Length: 232
Image (cartoon, rainbow, N blue to C red):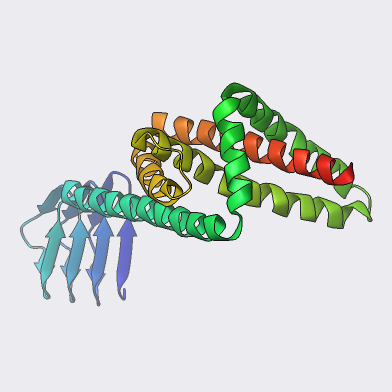
């Protein structure tokens, strides 16, 4: 037969003739005495067994499965670290732009988050539960679909911006200053802390989720107060 790709969870046994190359992946690889490979053998296995009489006319490349898993683990860890650094860098850049464009909104949201931490957390949680239900109800009607799409875009934008407020707040608390000029440094320090916390398995994700809810609730409260003020 021509080139072969052999995969198995436990065992691969080759007893015939292969005209080309063989690529195999299994815990145990066995070549019987009648096996003939006229090409190369490339295998990932922990238990290669070649019987007398087995012929391999090409080169052999045997890789231990444990070594492959170790390499894959390192690659996954590297990708995990790069993704978290990228997330932190993106939040920092967006935060800098937001600070430059909307300084008053950020100041009001920081004051709201600082003064009403637990109520902001509760508000953010309620919004996270109620908003999707309201969007689904609105999307049932043809006229409500654009409103639902707009509401979804606004919620996703607010959720993405939410950790930035808490990052600035935490950074200012560590600097023991609440001046406008310290917002940029506070943002930098706070983003670093959030990224480091996010790297902690399970706990980091929970903390980041709570931080997002606090910022979400504070931002929504400030925007609603502004809307009421403008309407009045």
